[in-house]
Every structure is written in C-alpha cells, then in structure tokens.
Image (cartoon, rainbow, N blue to C red; front, side, top):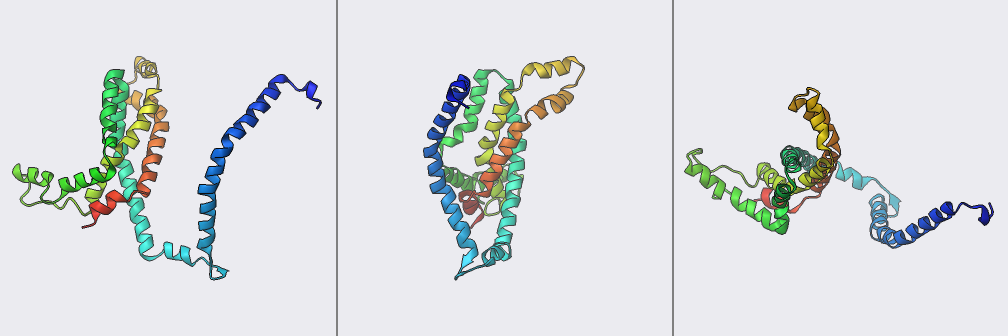
Length: 236
C-alpha cells in the first residue's frame, strides 16, 4: 500500500508501537541477561552431566528428604495462606467500609511492621513464644496452664510468626479490590429485600474475588520462598 494512502491514525499507532518497543528494549535486555539466560543455563546443567543427559538430579529432588521438605513447605504455605485470608479479609472489609481518614489509620497500622526488618520481627516472636517468654508467663500468671507450653521450635510457632509477617501482603490487595466496589450495589441489594449476609455473599464477595486471588497468590508464593522465619522459629 502506498505511504500516501495510509491512514494518519494508523501511522501514528505504528510510531507509538515502535516507541514502546524502544522503551521496553533496555528492560527486556536486563530480564533476558539476568533471568532468562541464568534459568536456561541452570536447566541445562540439571539434565546434562558427565557428557550425557540424565534425570538423576530430578529423581533426587522428588525422593527422600527432598520430597518431604517440598511437602512440608506446601503444607505450611497452604495453612499460612488460609489463615492470612481469614484474618485479612475482615480487616480489609472494615478498612474499605469506613471513612477515608479512619481507613488510612487502619492501613497505617497494617503496614507499620514494614518499618521493622523481618529478622527483628522473627526474633521478637521467638522471645514471645519461648518457654520463658511473655505469652507463657501471662498464661501461668492467670492460672490457665500449669507448666509452660512449647510454642516455639515447632510448626505452631512458625505458622504464627509467618502469618504476622505476611498478613499485610494479604490485606493490601484485598483492600485495593474492595475499595473499587461501588457501595450503592450493596445498598441496592438490601433495598430489594436481601439480608446483609445474602447481599455480602451474592454481591460483595464475588466482586472482591480479584483481590482474594491476588492476595492468595502473593502470600502463597512468598511462603514457598520464605526461609529466615521458619529456620529461626522451628530450629532449636
């Protein structure tokens, strides 16, 4: 097609596309060099050994202690993700339902732990959960237990610490999704005779599922790669 017959809007779009590609080129180069190439090299090394191809490395990964470690990691990740969702959803719902001033205060309290390093928060939980820690002393002082509970160096303490550290990563995506839901939809459902529970389950909850999916994905992926807290809390 002759250049003179090309629609000006088409040429403008083509220039925008070329500009976008040029702007993306540096970032794409960095991703290829620092991510794609190392992953490709690692994948090659995993199947090529002593001049031949082998799946022995993958066999080792999915058997014995490696398999037990993977299963335990997935188990803890699922539990922590479920607990953070159960705790984070009401917090996000409350923050999205109140005035912006109070909502900012609630969100500030949620993200306040980010001001402290993960290692410091982990050690704080270790101090709280140990046999001579504040929690056991409080329970003993109130007469609720006769001897200190073993709250640290086990899965229970690990789950508590991980939930506390990862809870903001669940609340923030939920709040972002809930804030975009028009309040008049719930009001319309109530005006049509729906009970608060019915309106929540049929109107609000489905509209907030994008935030649920984002929060669950984020927390679960972070759990899979979490190392410092499980190592310190669960290891004597």
